[in-house]
Image 1 (cartoon, rainbow over the protein chains, first blue to last red):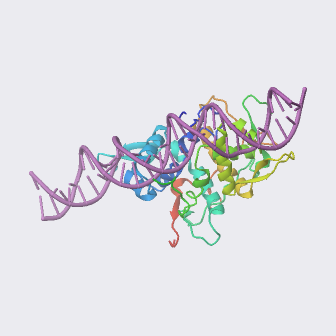
Image 2 (image 1 turned 90 degrees about the horizontal axis):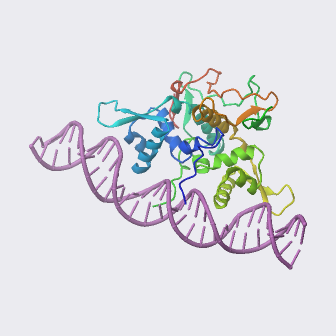
Image 3 (image 1 turned 90 degrees about the vertical axis):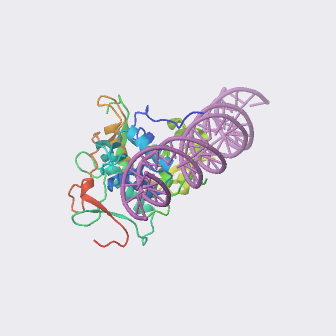
Length: 151
Length: 151
DNA sequence: CTCGTATGGTTTTAACTTGAAACCATATCG
DNA sequence: CGATATGGTTTCAAGTTAAAACCATACGAG
């Protein structure tokens, strides 16, 4: 056998990130980091996952430059885990996933956590893929172009 | 022990989908489905994953209503796998992930697959989370609101 | 000072998942 | 008829996940 297959050699921007976040917990840790959680115990309490798993995930997120381990804000000996610029770059991914999840994994009347604009308290606008000029684009309006391929 | 932890009971729209797509292959199968692949062998050749793993992933994607197994387009006895409406709803997620991946997992000069507008041949506009009124929103401009929480 | 508790992990162990390769059935082609 | 292609399933070893136990340091109470 071998290890879990790596996608680092793929030339596709969808594939490479999956080594870092293609599992059942990483995106939730990142979501919680966006919500301001920083400490090991905070993540563990929020997510309810085993401590060894959390430690492993934090390690690979740090290894991938998504989180950064920094000296604890309270002066303790341990570390806090905070998002790097790369990690903050995942915000649109989380918003997109959240909107899709709310659309398709909750019954219409089922309550769920909402992400709202801090000022107005309203939900975000739906993310919409658009052409360079702002035209809305459906999947059929797009194609993948491989390196070296001319128009 | 138990099985892989399920997130179906979470009230968060980010969490629930991870049972379906929180692994290293599902999003790539879906990406390929957006690119028009339909057959078992096409996916296997494109992704290079073991056939048993592909079969298992296709099964869970069908179980989650993301793919649908339909009679083969060529009249053969086997099945084709095509995106459902729910599956097509993942388009913004894939676009967001792709943009993030291209930004952070490729060197500046490194070639990669591009997703372009079919008409103009240009890359898509960057996805930008926005308030209800269209104002761009950074992570800090947002908060999560739990069910039952009043403004 | 010392005991009890909280925090932040690491280690151990068992079950589950992944991956490679072999196997099978049906269909096609020469 | 035999060789090859397609679409899987089965087998089995190795890797990963989860739970629980364990450990070390830090406080606070007594």
